[in-house]
Every structure is written in C-alpha cells, then in structure tokens.
Amino acid sequence: MAEVAQLARKRRKRKKKRKKRPGAQQQPQPPQPPQKYKHVLGYTDPGDGLVRETVEWRDTPQPNPPPRPLPTPQSPQPPASPQPFGVYQGPFGRLQAKRLLDRAGFGARRGEAVGLAQAGLQAAVQSLTRPAGAAQLTGPAPHDDDGNPLAPADRWGHDHLWWLDRMVRSSQPLVERMALVFHDWFATSNAGVERQQHMIDQSNLFRAGCLGSFLTLTVNVTKDPAMLQWLNGNENRKNAPNENYARELMELFTLGADREPTPAYTENDIREAAKGLTGWRNDWSPELGSHNFRFDPNRHSTANKAIFSGPSSTFNVNPAANWNWDDVPRLCLEHPLHASFFVEKLWSYFVPQPPSADTRDALASIYKSNAYAIRPVVEAILMHPDLYLGPPMVKPPVVFTASLLRALGRGVDTEAWAWLGDMAGQQLFWPPNVSGWDDDRWLDTSRLRARWLTVTWALEESYFDPWNGPDYDPAEERDPALEKALEALDYPPLRVEHHNELLSFSGNAFPASLASWQKSPYRAMRQNALQQLIAISPDLLLG
Image (cartoon, rainbow, N blue to C red; front, side, top):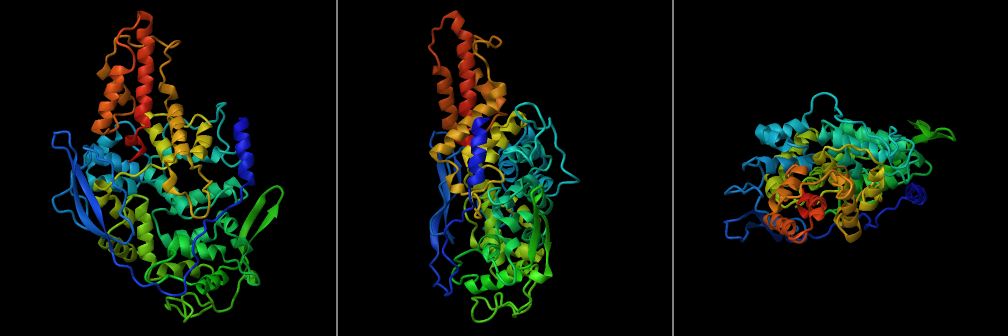
C-alpha cells in the first residue's frame, strides 16, 4: 500500500502535457506519389514445415509499409480473389470468432468463441453491435484487497478497477471497447480533472453514445465537465479566448493535422472557432470542487466568426456568421475532410494496417449516408476481409488483462490491477496527454515485464503449490501436462513452432530420474511454468 500511496502522490504532481506537433499549415503542399507495399493476404502450411505467404502489392497513403505479420499456420486462408472493399467470405470458425472478440471486445470467455462461430459472421457481428437492453454484469462484484466494495470516485486506482470489472463482466463487450476507443480519442486525464467522478461520468457518456451519432457525441464531449476542465473550455470567454479545445477539436478529434495535399484548417480557423466556443463556466467550493458547469451567454462572443471561411482558410466552405458553441463541432463534421479522417482513425482501432483508398472511400460513404452514425461503420469494419486476413494486433495492456481474466473466469478481486496497469503503460482515466496512449510502445522492455507480472497475478488462483498443496499427479507425462495447461487457458490458438517449443520444455523441465519425493512437486512446478509461458507468449499478446 505504501507503493500505491507513493504512486498516487506522483500522479497528483503531474501536469498534463501535449505532444509537440507541427502547427496548422497555411500553404498547401504538393501531392506525393503513392507508395507501394507488400500486403500479406495469409499463410499456408503445406505440411513440409515451411510456411508460405500469399501477397499482393497495394498503394497506401502511408509512407511506409505496415508491419509484417507473424507467420501462423492457424490463420484463416484468404479467398482466391480478395475484394478491395466488401464482406469477408472465408470460413468463420473458432479462430475467426476469437479474433472478432479480441478486436471488438476483451477476448472470449470459456467456450464463447465456439458458440459465436456457429452463428455466422453477420449474426456474430450484430450480436455485438446491436445489444438489447441494458448491460448485465455477470459474476462476483469487484472488491479491494480487504474484501470491501470499490470506491471509484474517491480512492486512487479504484476507478481503473471499476472499469476493468465492466470489461470482464459486461454482457455488452463492444460497448465497453468503444467506450475505451473514445476515451483514447477524446483523451482526458485525472491529471488535469479535479474529480474522479467527472472522469467516470465521461466514460458513461461514451457508453451511451459510442454507437450513435458522432455529431451528438462530439457536441456532448464539448460541454462535458471533464473536457471543459482538461482543455480549459471553462476559462474560454469573449474577452480572453482560449484556443486549446478548438485546436484539439480540429487536430485530434475531427480533421487531423498536416493533411495532404491541402491542410484541413489554418491558425485563423482555430482562433475563430475558439471564439465560437466561448461562454462555459462553473462554480467551485472546497466541499464539491468544480461543479455546476453551465453556459453563460454573457461570456460568449456574439461577433461573426469566419470558421472555414474566406481567404484566410484553406477551405472556404462557410459564410462568416455568429456561430454558437454547438455550431463549431457541426462545422468540423461538415468539413470535406472529416469523413475520411473519421473512418481512418476508427479503422486503426480494429485493423493495424491502413485501409486501401477504395475501403476508406466506401466507409466514408457509409458514414455520410447515415448522418454521422457510428454503428454502420463499425459493422462494416468488423465484417471486412482485412480484419480476418490481415496481421495480428498487439493487445493494449488493459485489453490483455481483461482477456486473461475472462479466459480464466476470474473477477476483479485485487487492487494490484491498478498499479500493474500503470506499470504496463495504460492506467484507465490516466492517458499521458491529449493525444491519448502511444500504442507503438505497448511492448518495450519495461512494459513487457509488467505483462509478465500481470500473468503471474492472473494465474494466482490456478497456481499449484508444489510443497504445501494437494499432491500433484506424480506420473503426468509431457503431452498431458501441456494439454492441461492449454485447457486452463481455454485452448488459445498457438503457432506450430510455439507449440513444439512448449512440448520440448515439458519434456525437459526436470531430470528423467527423480527421487519419489520429487516427482509430484516437480510436475506441479512444470504445470505452473507451462501456464505462465502460454499466457505471456506472443500468441496471447496479439489478437
């Protein structure tokens, strides 16, 4: 607990930081020629021990090709002529259902992937995207190390535990996953928000709106107390405009920085939008902190604002007018470059490689024709061939933890998950800055150690005590030992070479000749090691 208290003190001292990024450009840049990259469609294993890849060369808007996927003979086989955009037509079995649950939720509970596969692709996707009624939390309620109920609004780390519990127990995993997506998209942090309750309320805002209208969601985020504090919207008034939220609204939330060949916005657009967003304020008291957030017309600028208007803007698409605070998000979404930004960013949370131009344009068309609705775009992504035929994705730390707990059938029963999440680089409600988490650093050396410890804690209840526990089977052989370890983790799909390495370890974990008193404890220790090695393997770090 002393370590937790020390971490809490460090957290309070942190100030929100923003990554340094180039400012909005004033002059268009010349178009760059498209780059070619090798797109791996899949792998085949003809049985000779040599894995062969099937590829095609594609144009991509990114300057570098996507990372090469790990060879896996278990990967789904591609159709003979894959479409640039469409619906996945290959087999939809346990492996494909597991990938869907890894990307659109937090992994599968025991036996869940098999049941989902029997429904077929469309029904499986719609069971996630069109949940009925309120979410049900199945299983024991979470508690702290002393068995007490959580206090998510008051105690350090309990907000993380509260949300992790929802990820583990909710009957609507996609809703929780989309709430996590938008927590990263519209990143705010306890580091700059006075009350944990404001952060929890914002996560509930994301749950309620994550599959509805992105316009409605963006308007609600604009006036949300956590965001008003985080990006100083409550300090933005007509005589002293604050540009923080206007800048991030365009750069990170709706349009994107450094768009080519023409930048989406200029510094003047940011200044004018900031004037349109003036007027929000709140009260403060020692007992309640910041509260009673409201719009005050006396603090709002009533002058005409030239947002995406006139020669000072790269896109002259609106007249100058007395735009109100809720007009600004709408103008950003009506911008010609918003739809492509939205679908590419949303796509990146589900598929690691960028979409082809045809796919991007088709998704943007779906988005615009459905009046900025999020659900149709999510459904199209979850049924797209690239999700099932493309390379694996590294699971974010909290997704990795929740997936382990779901596979093991374990609930949130220790406060360790909060500091382990921090150590792994992703403590909920504490993104590092307004850009959200840097998912390129999920697997550096320090964070990999945190994942090892996460596995150790997760497997605590299935640990076999070699010396003081019940006698372990003293005659267990190599293959049954690995089978038992795989069964404990609900038979995760493993690469052939990884499976063979585990078999080799199982057969060589201890000397062939043991004293009678050693046979049971040594086999118990082998079983513990096998479960640990499986759970920390690349096959489970990826999804």
